[in-house]
Image 1: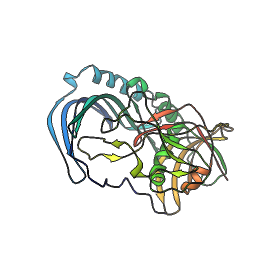
Image 2: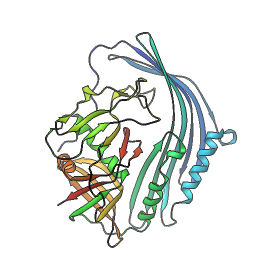
Image 3: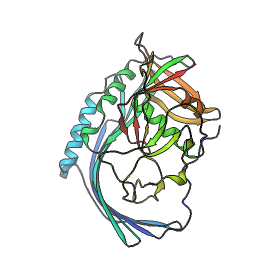
Image 4: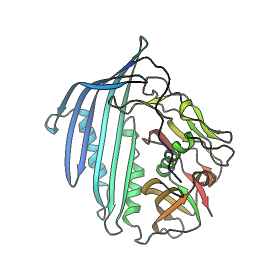
Length: 343
C-alpha cells in the first residue's frame, strides 16, 4: 500500500493576501545534559496567492538566560519539573519547551482581520538503554497549565520497566490511550481526505473546536465539520480552513482539532497502549505502529507491533470515551481512550 499524499496545492484565482505575525517565544531546551534558554521577539510577514508566495522577517531580537522575562522563567521551572520526574533508569535525550504569545493580522481584498493566541508545546524524548526503545511525546495547549503532565509521567514510568522481548503477534483487546488515539486519527487523515470510501463501520471523525485556539491561519473562526462517516469522507478541496504553522510557510488546507466522536461502550481492554515506540508509518501492506503496551492482568509492559489497512484500523474500533485530551498533531487533534479489537 502506498501512503496517502499531503494536501494538494490550491487552485483557482485568489487575490494576494498579506499576513503579519508579531510575538515573543521562549525556548527552553535540554539536550545531552546541557540546557539552553532563549527568548525571541520577532515580527514577520508573508504575501501569498495561488501563483506566488514570499515571506520576510521584519525584525528579530533574542535574549539569553541572563535577561529573560516572566514567561521564560515559568517555562524553565516547568522544564525542571519534567526533568525531575524522569526515572533514573531512563535517558532523557531531549526536552524542548516552547511558550509564546503572538498577534496575527491578515489583509485580504482590502479587509483586515486580527487575532491573538498563546501557545505552549512540550516535546520530550526518552530512551530505555537496555531495551533500546525510545518514546517521543509532544503535548501542548494554550497555557502551561493545559500541558498534559500526567501522560508524560505515566509513559516514563511504564517505559522504565518494560520487558526486553517485544510481542509481534497476539490477539488484542486493546485500549489506546488518548496520546496514541490522537496519533492514529492524525495518521489516517491524509487517507481519509484523499478519497476514503464510505460505508465502512467505525467511528465518525469531525473537525471540531478548541476553546482557546479558535482561529485558522487566515483568522477565520473554526467551525465543526464532518470529515468521515458512513456516507464517506470529505476531500482536501472541501475543507474551509487553512493551516499556517509559520509566516515562512505557505498555508495549506487542513482539518483543525480533529476528533473521533464517542462510541458508547466499555473502553477498557485486556491490554493498554500508552505510547508510540515508533510513529505510525505507511508500509506496503498498511498503516503500522509499534506500541508501548501494558497487560491489565499481569501488569507486564511490552512492545507490540500492529499493521493493518486503514479500513481495518477504523473497523476495529468498538468504543471511544467522551473525555478528550488535545494534542498538537497537524492542526490539533483530540484523543480519547479508544478500544480496538484485533482478531
